[in-house]
Image 1 (cartoon, helix red, strand yellow):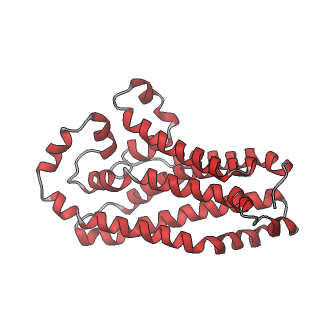
Image 2 (cartoon, rainbow, N blue to C red; image 1 turned 90 degrees about the vertical axis):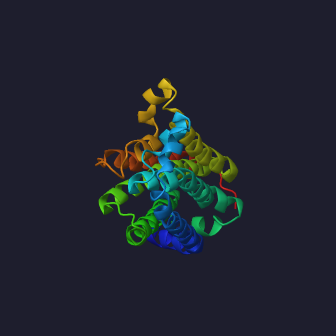
Image 3 (cartoon, rainbow, N blue to C red; image 1 turned 120 degrees about the vertical axis):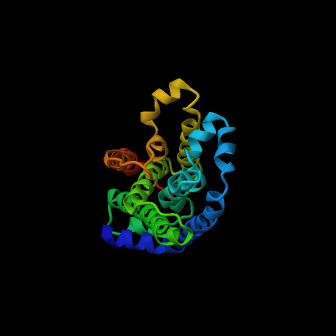
Length: 262
């Protein structure tokens, strides 16, 4: 029965998911199209050196290299984009549906609340993976047309780290929504925390305390470890996956007990 619930959730969200995936792929294509112009301008890196250290940390190193350009122009903003998607989607899957009176039908079926919550968590994760796949394919297939080539395994690693980092904040929004029934609160906390941690990462180069605590920030691994240019392990990505699962499971006892508005 939970597979049917998953299929129904994915069907209901397919249009929004398609637009997010296409929008991000097109955005990436536009970024790629400007690479030849940037690479031909030797003054770009000189300008970069005039920026505050926090911004240089966010934008990466050599802007004329494929990895540096993608980091500065695309992946530095990707945490914000993915955090917004994950938080809004996660908050809407339980709390948003409850606020719109759309939980009556699924809860009237022979489907436990645990199965409902877990199926919607899986739908959130699959949605993020679809968006990540769209981004990966656009960079891998379109990049060479603009003389921007990065090894596919590096692109895959960088994309996976961003997607699974965003999964943490989406899972947090889903868990809060399931526990409280308040979609606004859930979206604000999930998206706000993702954005706040991105800001803290940019400041970590100038604030020693933030740098020392960087290991607790998912965006440190996605942005600070240079996954586009250096090999990275899959340990952080697996950790983010498990943290998100843990957040959803932590909300399950509360969701089972509380009264759900129909």
